[in-house]
Length: 144
Figure 1: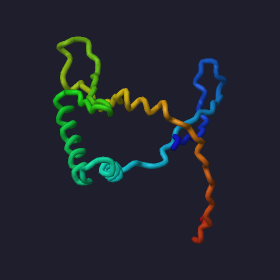
Figure 2 (figure 1 turned 180 degrees about the vertical axis):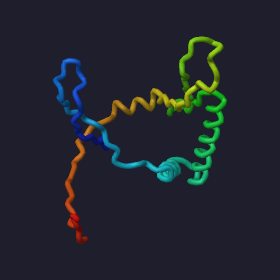
Figure 3 (figure 1 turned 90 degrees about the vertical axis):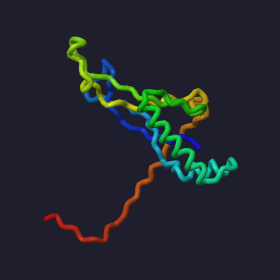
Figure 4 (figure 1 turned 135 degrees about the vertical axis):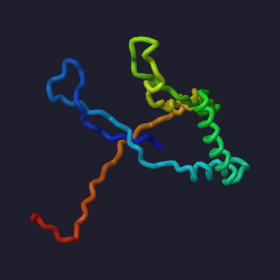
């Protein structure tokens, strides 16, 4: 299977670009979702665990990861990557001025493992075939 892409025109942001100039870019398009249920079924097909066992373990992993993140820990999942919380703050002029409420909402940062990043070397790209669909409407319309 290949990653599908579509082409889109975007403003040319180069310094020497003419006013109104645009460049054509490729942008990947998500064409499907791999559901949690399907993931669990596929894992079950590749090991001796039952579907409910897999769901229970993955759900427990999420709960434990949340707890670890709230303790300020990095969650390392071998072969997958790591998760951590990261936050900054509004700047102030002195230590005395700094208060906890100046901290911004944390972001969850995911850093993929080296083995997960290797999937990039296997990617093929394929242009998304866009088919136009015209449907006649059987309801009356008014321009009043």
